[in-house]
Image (cartoon, rainbow, N blue to C red; front, side, top):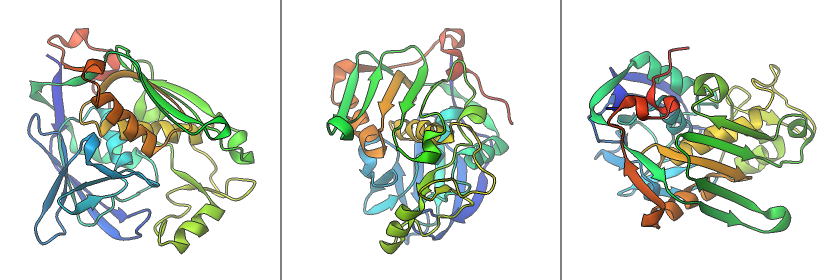
Length: 307
């Protein structure tokens, strides 16, 4: 049986929210089988639990926000991406503010936290959502066209194309494909940082956003070049961060996908719309598990070593 996974012990981090600029403490704790990933707002007078699922997403402007009973947690996608890449099924996420800390702007710090706590198998079958037929969503036309798609695939792979028309982005790869069977999430995707442009940062800060952003947790560009002294971590870091985000957004589904995801200029809103479109058609998917671990796609069956 391919088993579910959780943490061996708890682990903690302290940081600031990218948009709020608030100091926040994050505690990741083991959770029992079949629990899923639960965010807990422990700073509130009465603690509120927010179970991760596609319909819990209530805002997709600049990040993915989940809500329940009047409480919300912003910018969950990088932590969710790390959970997806490491195959974490069950987890409690205790948080002392309304936004997940940005840390270094990628998923690498979350990967380190999860791996340092230890990942253990649980005595329950790991459940997947297998896509049975193509599901597609789109927005805009012509130069404004964006789309995202899920197709049947016995594994999990993602392909993404961006189109920013900026000198610093144009000089890098603007399309990438990542397959969990042949790639290594921790090495190939997890270190890709979020990015933005100085003119957009100034506009967002005037609206009370991006208050915690800096060159320490984002790639920042002016009209011509990358401003970070150390440059890029990957030659195609921009589009790889879009893959990182997509993995996090898709994992908000609550279970890992058996599917091929492809997208052109997609973002948090379209990714969540894609999940809702999938769930709206009972013939488009099924919940499945693997009685024999050897029958499962290898990229989804084996724990990655620490790095």
